[in-house]
Image 1: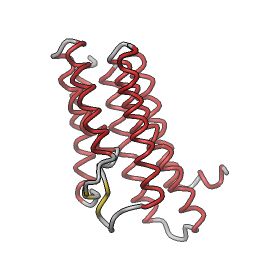
Image 2: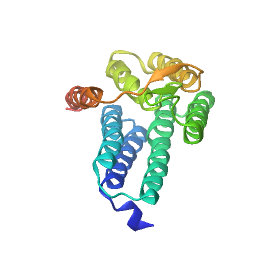
Image 3: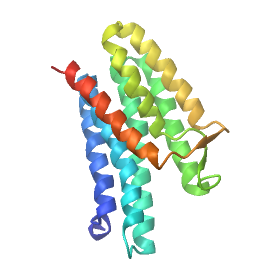
Image 4: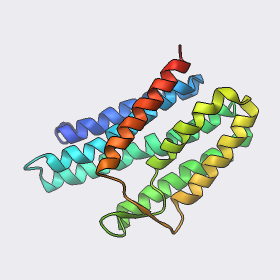
Length: 201
């Protein structure tokens, strides 16, 4: 098992899992700038592992299948569990926030299960909004968290996550971003990490 996890692409995926773990840790502690910084870099690692895998020569079918499953399971943690936990944390773990967190988590699992079975509609089109977009939106939304009261921001976050959850499982076609978008995401992560780093001072 560990031999399958040891190639460069899968190590990149596991680096993304470590970033997601930091995101969960800081979300529980209520240090939201650090949590969002970590989740942004989880996205960067998630986008990087596929590029690395495609560049590797001689990767076996078993290695590719293992890598795909590893990536999908890590996506659940990074882009479903983490946003759900952020919502609970912002809501001070109030029971009123549990239904929203469950919807976020359930739609994330449903979406990834659907994708694992049916894949893309074509080479560059998803059905529904891919889960990594949720964190890209949340990362921008949390920039404004210090300017709002916790109650107001909790409501805004609740609504935003429910809308994103609906889009994740909606019968809409969305583009699979790649190419230059990869560098745009890295730049986005760098800029927002700078903003969040300033907030942590």
